[in-house]
Image 1 (cartoon, one colour):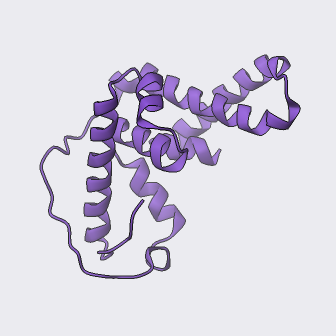
Image 2 (cartoon, helix red, strand yellow):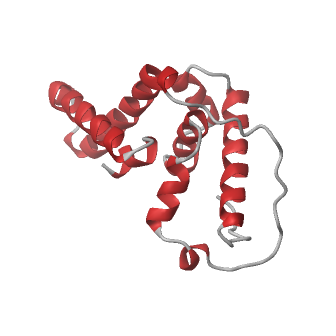
Length: 154
């Protein structure tokens, strides 16, 4: 469910994704050849479900235009996690525009390469890189507004 919450815009959407993903898991569990890899396989099914959800519902979502450039501060603050809760971080990611959120999660959280993301999402590798850069800029600006100016690299 945590994976679905990162990819979804809302709790309800995450629950719908989760439900859809588990239906796929139960329908295809007989195809798993290596039981030791079951968790990895289930995660992959859920990520694919989130991507499919995005493609299926993308036209229904309002897209925010984050094209304008924002300046970021270089002021040093040491521990982001001491300044912001996990729920606040999740909300910041959930508030990203759909494409930004998908690429950010796939690259930063789930560890996919830009080439893999491009193939999964049906976009170019350059678009994946651009979406990630813009997502980071948006998150930096939101963190700045919250009073968190330095947060290391992600």
